[in-house]
Length: 468
Ligand code: MN
Ligand code: MN
Image 1: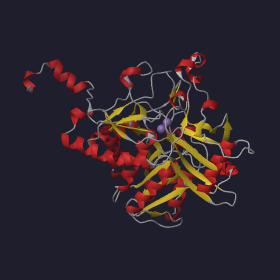
Image 2: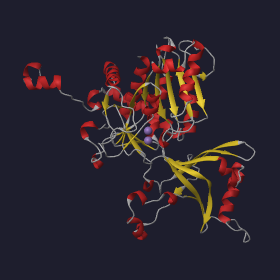
Image 3: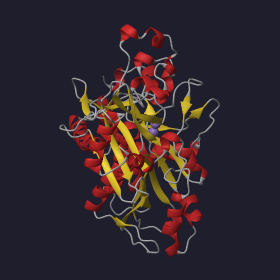
Image 4: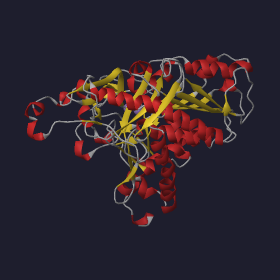
């Protein structure tokens, strides 16, 4: 239709009213193919890095291949120098030095690499009615009923009595065994089905089945447990008490897959927040000669509230900035107060099957691009950093000027629930910060869904933020 044929109302409406379209309608076929290709590497990352420790190992591996070196305290880094700093094997800071003075501030992207899962308790192993099981304590916010009858793999570390440490990953290889929480058959679920959904499966019912064959000796008691412990001792050289000094995490065993006949989506465990971890990692790896010093942090413990020395509500970030700034004669706080941060975390994508917790005008949607979330929190905006209009305006212009397809979103309708991200802890240090990430369907479920286009746009968003 030519401009002449448009009515005055049409022209005015184009000029004045918001008209966000599905990203597919705004991208060329080549751009969409580029997004799809980008997600091949993303799926590999999801399969390789199922826990925070594995994500750190993979990030360091990719960083070293791109010329990043271990951070040296006291070193006066030169423009385009690339470094990484690992915090207790569960969090990592990756940086590229800018050409501008560090006192002008840094550009920071923070994603988290922990995801909801079942942690083994410290005395996990027991036998009941000649079955051997592990006791667990769930980690992060889960709908407990989603976790039984899902094949699980086991990842983590065990520190033995002599102090030696072994890493464990069982269930990922096709020849490995897997593990499983059982559920009661529907025929006998009368009592269970009368429970409220939050207690359909109770925390102490999330017991993982790990064996069933007894040790062949009539004199021993707990013969299945003994037989399992004998297997573990032979394979890993551990005894039962070694579980006390272990961190073992049960996670869904299945691999990341394309979802949909059109293969437009990725389905996988742990996309909250490895989708932003991968995109922010790739952005820092691809960052070349930035003006501002750029940092990507992959942090731990977000799902439990960011407390603890590997979570962002601790001092490891300000300490690191102070170490980076000191050789230039600046205090860490001088750098931080001039800095900007994208808190790289996911948001809830509108789900047409469960529409009531959303307010459609303010929800993020699959395929509408990376989502910038001004605030999260609960009730009357409690427990959040509410990004200022000025900072939202700055990021909005940055994205628009650089062709980033993006949308705004909120974490559900008012009083529908809520949640938070690391944004508040970064903001409390005096950074300017806003949440920027990918919309997710079925968040915190064993199998979460994202759009390949949104994943790619998150990567592009972090890249333009670093390059600006
Ligand atoms: Mn998250
Ligand atoms: Mn989460």
